[in-house]
Length: 331
Image (tube, rainbow, N blue to C red; front, side, top):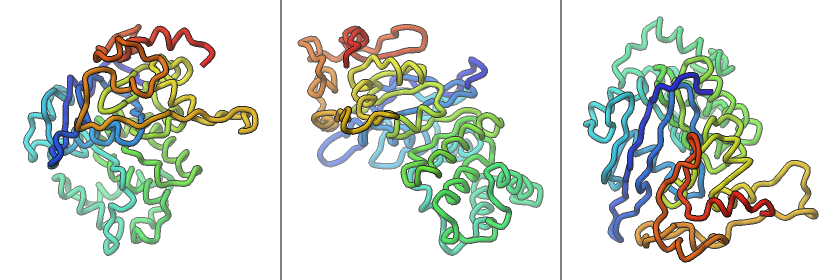
């Protein structure tokens, strides 16, 4: 839980598009949010909503992804204005990422300790005895034997690989770490362990804050302080995790909740409700609410783009009809 009001990251009207032959894919299209010291901010949404694009906008803008406008201020420095070399100096120390395909990150010809030494050298740190002693201590924290250092990645299970990647990403005690779909390739037991581990790293002060990106709202709810729901490149709803899960106000958030299985409810008693339709083509976005063609609460007003509204303290929503959603107890 965030223990201070210090803002680690402030994103203001960020737009990052993929420039392709068909046109601009508006994957991140005007995002506004903050991350506070000690907070785990969850980011959830369907595939293609812009979650991972947000991550790589903050870490490294590689073509065809381009920054269009807006700011992303990390401890007072706008990441969008920094050169590649300036960003490199911040990586792992101020901002770090556990990438979506982390399990494929290792070289099969290098032992884990060699991989770690090479990685930290790239960021200007000496992998001397003192540093390696720190590494061994971190291995104990993530419940891995020191002997793993002398093994190759192919000798490790998926869960062990993920823990090693998390350890490496947090070795320099970053102010902010971005975890991008870190549970997607793991079995249920490993998912729970890795999710809890991220919170433990925060509680131990090893990482300052985290952005946890996933499509799995149930997993996210286990550790997130606040949850940001994205749809078609934009923020749909942002609020306290309990409010988002137990009292969703945006039609899309409610649809996500209703698509999840509930403990104690059998299929014969109640079927899961899917979300009809498909997300819009992000190269051809029309004026209006981006969820309106799939929304049961649609009105004529939805043909105009809704503005972000603050409904109460730290709860934000982009919807014309959120009051109707909130009052509908039979959904």
